[in-house]
Length: 257
Ligand code: PGA
Image 1 (cartoon, rainbow, N blue to C red):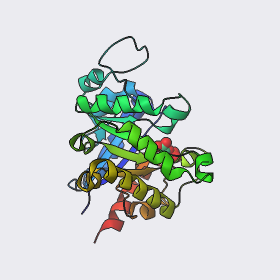
Image 2: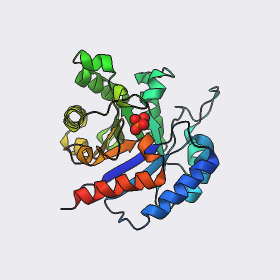
Image 3: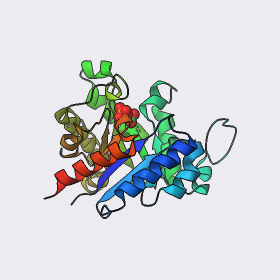
Image 4: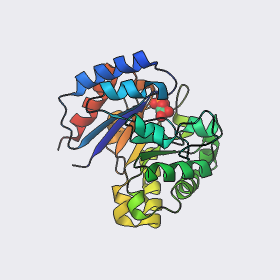
């Protein structure tokens, strides 16, 4: 069976105590699940990372952002060395809110991806078109450009260490409308085609592609069963441990042969 990735980014919502509470519950609820084909991950705020690592058990912990230098005059940024110091080996790069609220560019995401790989940290690169780009029929071009810039210059071996989350901007967060399973699968096929063009078919097949944007208990199973969707990256519907556990179990049950 293909490996399945299910994770959540808690955005700027959980304090250290809330993160620890959430992870302790989620770990207990999911402890019995077979791990060979499943990776669960949680991406909390920087301040909660160290406590999160201590409560996580089998759940992988990631950071929400990272600077692209080891150190320097970058007030407010966190370096890869600082993430490694707290045992973090996964980092989200280029989330829609970083790109559209905090004005990060594709070139910044490229530097971060390369820097993370150089430090043995798995980048989870987020890409997605805006509603306007979708209306103009530009979705696949926009996604291809985001992927090509962010992964520019990587060898196939390096690219194979990257994960990509497709998160349409119009689907994310309060007021977002989830993509239909067909629409999401078409965009995933387009991203996979771009990866084949850049790195060849073997590497392209190894890069996990996750869908994110208003995933909820009603649409998670259908989305997770689409071709080229290797996992789900969930916000609001995963912030309650019991609710997230319910989604995880539904998705797993639907994958049984
Ligand atoms: P949402 O968030 O599931 O609450 O839409 C998704 C995300 O921002 O990654």
